[in-house]
Image (cartoon, rainbow, N blue to C red; front, side, top):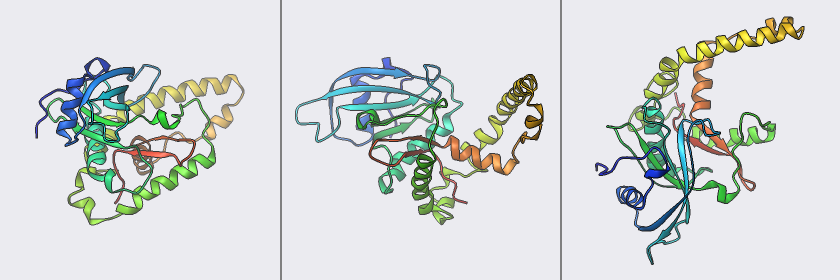
Amino acid sequence: MTMPIRHPIDGEGVTVDYLNGLLQHSGQAPSIADVTIEESRTYGDQMVSTAARVLFSVRYHDGMAQGWPRHLMLKIARTDDDVMAPFYANEVAFYTQLRPSLDMEAPRSFGGHYDNETRHFALLMENLTTRGAHFPTVLETVSIDRLQRLLETLALLHARYWNASLLRQELAWLGNALEGDVAHLLNDAAAPISSMKSTRSHSRLNSSARSAGQAANYRQAPRRCTATRCHLINVLCMATLIWATPTSCPMANAVCLIGS
């Protein structure tokens, strides 16, 4: 089925008509009567992300709520460019095809769609802040305990499909560390940018280390990882967004799997 509407890239496009169209496309029954935008943030708005997020509350038509939450989140493309399109396509497929069958902590999804023409997407999800979820930033220290629980959560995801024949058949769209659209983005398209940033970072660090009398320690630090290690680290980190709630293990929002 073709979506009759285009996905927005900011909160202004999240209207009643748009949301009802997305729900209808996803085969969901509720009908929204009113929507109130609470927050709209994208890359650069005190946030570093591959996507934009719109938090909002809704009022359903009488008798249409059927236990659905009033507070929701719409995940959409962060800009008008299509650089992150492979992430978007895989994430929609994950939530619409794989998430329902996985027994693991991950956000509830209420519908999603990826537009092959515009290479934009939309995922309608629960607003995790209503469960007290905390999204750590790069400025925060993450405890060893939280990392251990995160790995346990990821293990549930990977263990089910590890080396499964499905990954080379109907789930081939997932790709792996070296093959597929996500791998191409990480290993080929993003590699030159990462290399330039790494060179600049090493230059600044080297200068700082000398001024602090720590040049010897810096010279002993590894300059780069091997190609294989970089591939695995990039796919694992870039494919999984993490957060934690006060009463549960960290949750994983995976957009691809490493199964072979």
